Length: 499
Image 1 (cartoon, rainbow, N blue to C red):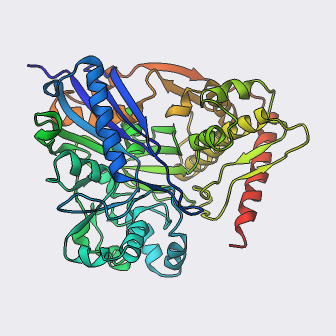
Image 2 (tube, one colour):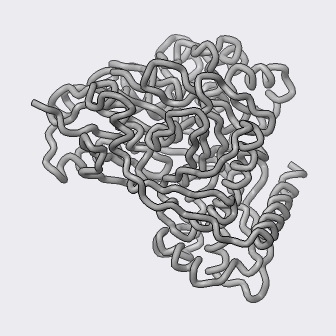
Image 3 (cartoon, rainbow, N blue to C red):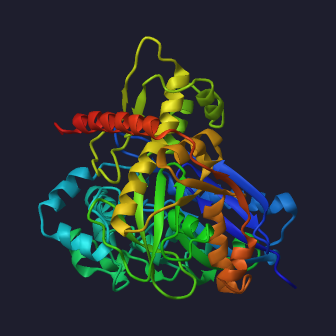
């Protein structure tokens, strides 16, 4: 019997989602569930790993139920996940020893400052392609080992293991039988040699991490194992996994050198495929491993914005200025401009190209006439300004002139934001018909490993184009707005100076 679907599990920072794709890469069913965000101290962010697992499996069952899909209809499961988020759990019981420390969490900023004084910092840059930062998993894992009673002793005895969210989901899906990760997630830990494609002993030694805790590293498109029969009543192959941004790059069919995409999710992430050789950045971009399905190593340059769509969630949930996120578009268009207001959404520090963990959210240019509509517009525009900072840098670092940017992620549905991005960057902005490219990338990786799709050429035929936004702003106005943005960023950076 022909299998009809690939099931993509998209485990994000604020919600778990499941999407069923058919042979034409069309969405047949989806389900989504938000889960609890925990902020125990300023700058700290945690999740409950058990809630992540239960939310993820419940949306999988819900999505299948919507169209009456049976487990026997599923050709493979692809997983995409929030990267860097760190989980440590008991090997036997599967019980987490501590909440998941989320990629946004800044609790280990001081540990990284100490690292920067050591020659190991330069070694880490060379070997991992990353800039030492609290963003990555290594310092988070070290924190758990150093601060949760008894965990280090248990780790040294081989009783507890570490994983990013992909590893945690595969562990649970296989009933605890499989402890693996893929090359893209491994490349975000700051413990992985992206040239030799293996865990690095010297970095593990520096962070005092027992190497037996680490998962086995495999390609992004391969069969990792099969689901435990207790879950779906039958074994289903788990055949694709990659970090969310690498999945989006793959889902946008950026298979060739020089192609790039920007994702407007909780954070914002610009990735460019740099081919089979890692491109080294001198100005704050990351060199990372891209997902590939041909068994060859592929690399990408990446620029990270810590707060993108999360800025709109803040306006909705904490500031109560919005009923729903889509309402932000209407509000932004209800005013001609921001009235001179800029919002630098550095709620958890600034990522590329600044890399300042102590910068904080800053609103400048407020007058007596400032309304909430101005602030909503300023938060949306901040996503575009930060993306433009990265595009400018990526052109400089890669030597490749960028003429268009493929976009995806929840906030890419906002037409105002996409037009403003096109105007402020002077680039064509191309939005596909299906903006769920992260889940689509996971599906493609899983489907290629099981023969559901033959090759990447067949996949390209499936992807439909949506809308293209073309720049229309006068250059003088563009320069004036960018000048104001750079001044606003200086204010956010000045706040960090005394730390």
